[in-house]
Image: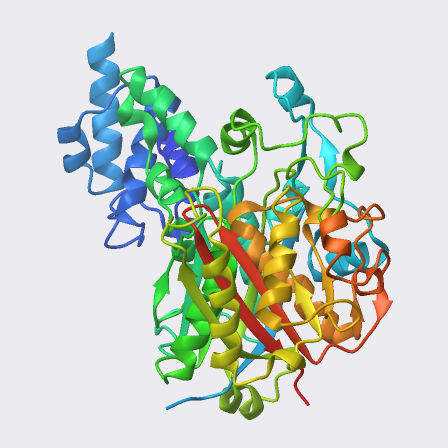
Length: 85
Length: 423
């Protein structure tokens, strides 16, 4: 339940950065941000900042390097939130 | 190769009119875009008035994507993208498809400094040990070439895409650079123009130099007084102007409307020698620039019938008129009609040349010469050289044949372009 909610939250963040010809429906758990969703690599840093604001966490450079797909991002978010507790 | 170059599109974001039709209406009727700005008063500026285009957020949405609008804090970029996109559409050109750029179209879009408000925002974050929070938009909104880069992406231009910078000569210089590129066969179409940010961080330095009028805070519309005996400094402005330059072959081939021909032009510098300095023009260089422009255009001094001057509303205006008079060898009633767009928009700095070129080109379309509402008290040294009938207070009917437009900038740099009626 919580995972679903986080996925929706993340999808809301990511959709802003989709090129015009990629529909929101294309965002799946295994979508690669750059290769499949065609998100400009420069915008990945903006996604990271939005994720930080939305979840109240801080992502380091190595987290960003690991964040290739939507699932990667959700795993990192889950782990950061767990570490915070 | 020496091909003819036409103007086929105009775009403008001026203090007295956003969009060509609003701007034209204001220029025709003598409506000023200079207003009092509380922000400048609150900051303790001597000059609390300025020319600033008014752009509602809803209008921005027509030019920028939601993503581009996010964190957008670069006024010059907004003005430039709007004017540039408008000029492109006015020329009847479409945005290039997704896969392949238009190799024959380029952009030369100048500025002085871009995105100063974004820069300020970034500096606060960096000084707060928070550089990581800048995001990706800080660089593209503050690099000088951000404006040509944004337009290049929107339009899909594959020829030269660059930004020139020569202070207040920037916009006029860009027209000449674009003309040369098309003339020499290196491009078919060049979007040229310039933009300038607005706001206290742009205008503050000029206020500090005490070259802005400080006695007109209660009657802003009378403050910008080019050629007037009571001119007391230039009113700071901002905005953008844009033109599509196109080879005659390309323009005719697609049946484009033609505003005028760019017949020739010249740029030079006074080298900050003689009477020239960082802030003052060397008259010898100014006259040389005008003569070289005429020579490049292949016309006689007597053929110029309209001048759009640089004329900023400082004590230098009389000197500029003297330079025109001496360079052209013309005085009194024989002097061409002359006007100063700055009387209604202020000095749009790096954008001034392009904004004023757009005004000069609209005069061809409408067969008139815009008025100079604030110079009913002409400077006596100007009256010695020019008959007052040549400096209309109100817009008059006159079909321009050859218009000379000049801009002069800090650094003692000059640009003069010659436009000709296209028949």
